[in-house]
Length: 340
Image (cartoon, rainbow, N blue to C red; front, side, top):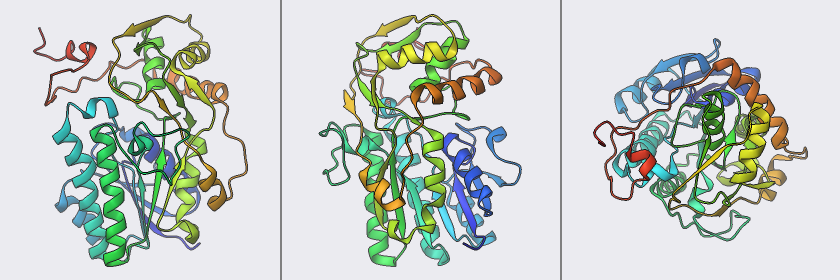
């Protein structure tokens, strides 16, 4: 495919940084838009053009579309904290819905965008039967999942009204290099590894028997980056991620081994979350011709652990603008500035 100009939102974040690298390797011109609220400027490759700003700001977004004739948009920016989303509803919907709509409007108005790629989440399924497949009726159980489903539906009606092609990916529990290990509210592997560096026990909400499948970024980023070259994927929705499932207790042991520390776990009071969440990936394999095996958890953890050790420990972040404190997990409530 000829070189194209691509916009990547959230390109200083974890998934965005890796997708940006894949796009650059394929010879595209990449413009990264990120407000650096969760990502780092150091994650952005030197060959990408970086613009600091928010997808929620129409002036910023419209200005970028006026400056560049984007062929493709990869909308990867989000605040993906499912558990916290119950307590930051307004922030969740502004960032995860209105920001997306701002980009969709700009893509329609530009008239140059050949495909809009969006990272949704298996959070849209809620407590559905497992493994979750794309033919299930979504029933999200948290505001984050509701926001992601709303954008999926918006892309569908936008295509029907204006002809904007799109691809929706529903990744889950992705981990690996460039992940923000200092976020206390999301990315359990990053949280565990940061706790290991800080000499702290791993913290698990509830009994640790929750079941998840974990996905190394190298199994995800290249598929997303090259999806726009596959017309059979257009206007489709795809689960993407690992097939092998683990309890959080098993994950904690594997992460401790990767970090070379003894396993110490503190079990916190359970929070309201889906107990079993993992997906079927037959559709993405068929459409994209994926034949290789997934990166084994031990191998992926070892690669991430090596990167994490080079970065060093991080002070866990505190989301101070909590909107609803009722039923907030005690460990999150305790770190708020005026909690005492």
